[in-house]
Length: 33
Image (cartoon, rainbow, N blue to C red; front, side, top):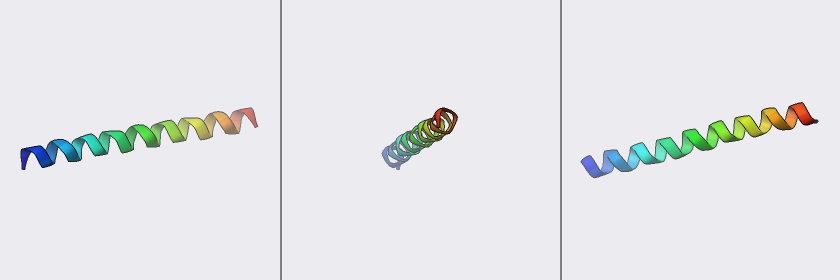
């Protein structure tokens, strides 16, 4: 259970970072365009 929680936490962190990076890229792209 502990390992599952750790894995789930890592996946959530990766998704959060990917989402934040994607939003930043869209914001920068909108500013440049």
